Image 1 (cartoon, rainbow, N blue to C red):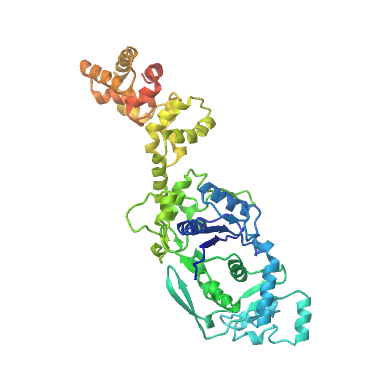
Image 2 (cartoon, rainbow, N blue to C red):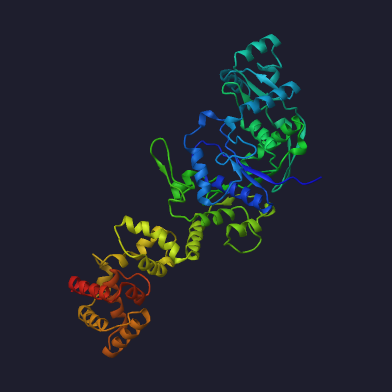
Length: 503
């Protein structure tokens, strides 16, 4: 038998911003598909009409465009199995649910919400199953005429009829064999007449079958639904077409057990969404893109949360991740969300980028600050300070003195490092600098050090005062790298300014 081409799908619901855990699930699906030369599909599960949020689908598509995670088929690009939005596949679901009813694998239920609530009060841990269904209002207990009348009134749901006392085996590619007895399962609702839409369980199985999905890679929270889906494949007599399951470990809170939530991000100061999201009240939830993370860093960071390559290596390009990825190396236990490690990854990827690329990313920030300066000059600055930052927007804090003359001087540094004779000494230094023709870092440093030695000055006193004059604080890269970028005239001008202000 010829092996089927690998086909996986990412199927989020458009109910709000995409959680970073969902992004990781999509990434693992993508890596698995590309590793096996397969297809990666974006399917939108919008069967819950009550929770639909405008703009959420666009947000999902934009997220993966930013991360450079490309789909082969999906709502935004189409494909052989379109439509890929569940709300546009209603007729398909209705046909399949009718088949289940005809076979006796499903039945109509007419219980109202109030009636179900009453049963919950009467029976502890009530669930709609083989032990209770014959005491409820459904097509198994009511006369045919009444059933037809209620169907015509269009107020019903269709429930899956689960036979009790049977062990259901699920072969999970990460967790091994999982066995659940059918007696613990309730007769899940598969279809709702009110909106003519299926529930998650039916829609997933029908779509996975019709789209020829070979592997379902999803979060651990969906593991309890796997036995039900196995039973649905059997009811459709399509067990041979059933995809293989893999349930990924949860992303856990950085400082303890429990699933990572938005509250953790708010409390500890990191994003839990890929992009900024503005809710209906105008509140903005921060995203990784707007926080200054590079997409490559986010991908690399997420890839190692729940999967390891079997080595100590941490930095991978997307193609290298594809080559190395395997579900066998995914963890069964949850992965703590170490957001500080995410910053480390971002730092590493900034260092890997060329100075010209970082410069182009820095220029809009300079423009916002009202700075107009040549790109070559900015590139020289970037080369000096990029190893000091985790994010592009931190470049300004590390380099603002290159673009603006200090309008104040660090008081602690002045009281400690600006001596009574500093103005006189720096005035003499500026005279020496004025005579220097080659203002390169190395040449200027040699001349200044020789001058200090000839004068018998204390090198630390001169250098600290010099740095204060140029930067306004005792920070920044190598002092003579700074002078080389500023140039002779600007360096001398700043010395003069400092001596006038601080004397």
